[in-house]
Image (tube, rainbow, N blue to C red; front, side, top):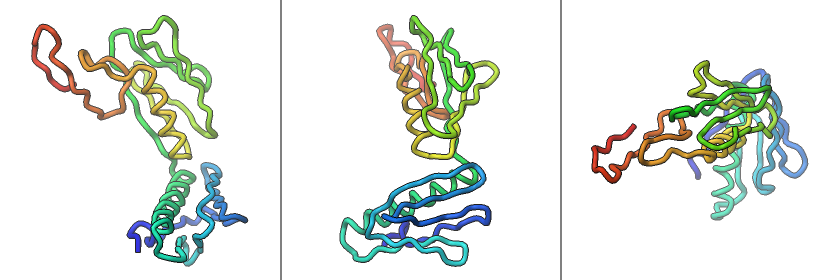
Length: 186
């Protein structure tokens, strides 16, 4: 059996999980409610504060869906209890980020400011005082990650000076350039 699929998902006291028609999973908690459809052949049961996902056969498709469904349910439970965050940094002279209402406004070397609007439910921005870093937070892991990728794509780090938007802790490999000066990671 799948190691990921067979491990139970602990369900905290303040979280409720319902299985609706067509294997639609609804998880509610202190931070909100999330819904997800999983493969109709899989069975989801609750026992002693844990959620178990079982599959009917050992076919390749059922094995793949088994681990996926368990991971999706675990991410939903984590999202409605603690939430997810993604930290990004802005590097470059004159590059900065600021928050206007619910929107994120970026000055990243373009002729106009770039306005990013959060589309998803419960997705929010927090910007540092100096405007060099910001955090995207929300209950849905997929929405937070997708929005972080969209923001980074506005000005990805360039390889000669490292200017641009990058994930916190991301190392940009710097190229030497024409003068042949030393290349060090920043």
